[in-house]
Amino acid sequence: MSPRLIRKALECVDVTQYVRKTHAEPLLQTDELNQQQAMQKAEEIHQFRQYRTRVLSIRDIEQEERLRVQDQVLEMYAGMRDSLDDARQKIFSVREEYRNKLLEAERLRLEALAAEEEAHRAEPEKKMSTTDRDKRKKEKKK
Image 1 (spheres, rainbow, N blue to C red):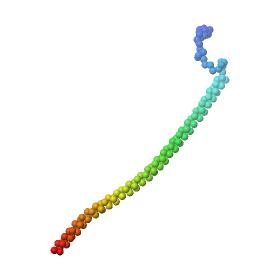
Image 2 (cartoon, one colour; image 1 turned 90 degrees about the vertical axis):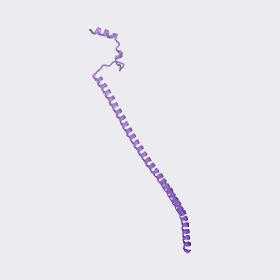
Image 3 (cartoon, one colour; image 1 turned 45 degrees about the horizontal axis):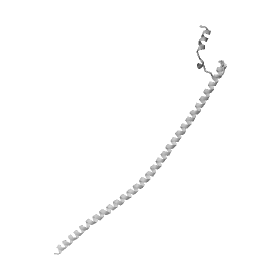
Image 4 (cartoon, one colour; image 1 turned 180 degrees about the horizontal axis):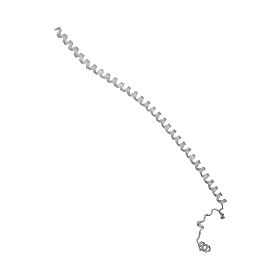
């Protein structure tokens, strides 16, 4: 096939959709142009890497800050727990003292009640024993 026939066949085909237009006028691809484009691409990559490095360092700093805040919160909660335990212990000790006082009062009341009951039991026995003695004395006198 001759180049003329190829051009005639390709004129019917619309290839504009496959051609990338980066500039208004077409440029000849030369070594200098290739080198310039490579430099631009390298600069873009370098800028992207710098940006990525900055983002990663910011991310690391924020992660460290979150961990520091988390440690502070845990320390604060530990302090709150300790103060709650102290307050609870104070309440328990006061309650225990009050309970012991009430138990002691109840014990004393029961002891007094038992002594009183014992005294009531002893009185009739004394009366009986005194009457028994009186009877014995009377029997001896006779």
